[in-house]
Length: 128
Image 1: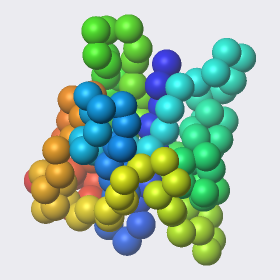
Image 2: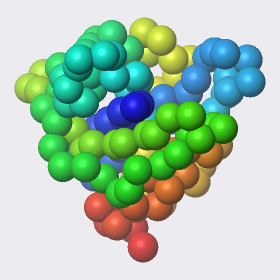
Image 3: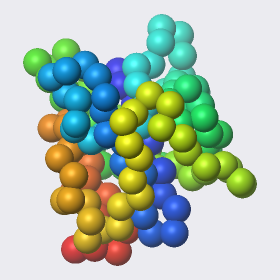
């Protein structure tokens, strides 16, 4: 299981550009990562946001449906998240971070697994 966070602030969502591995470098994703054995999904997402972005988040509702990732080996599950007071994300493991409004979601090349989540996210950000 892989979990991701749709971190929303002021009607924009945080998108992260992958720096590695080479086959996905330059593609964009929601922050997150693998759930470790014995770990609860939301705890894994809190840990991953701290490791990747240096922030503390509060996890909300699931967003969209489960998405099968490359070769069907893993499932991506994305949750809405919010930054805790005063937190500002840093690109600790990504090339770049961007805050995207609904009309900007198509301005970056998303990883295939994230595309259905982007579609589910658009109405939440005020887009159609």
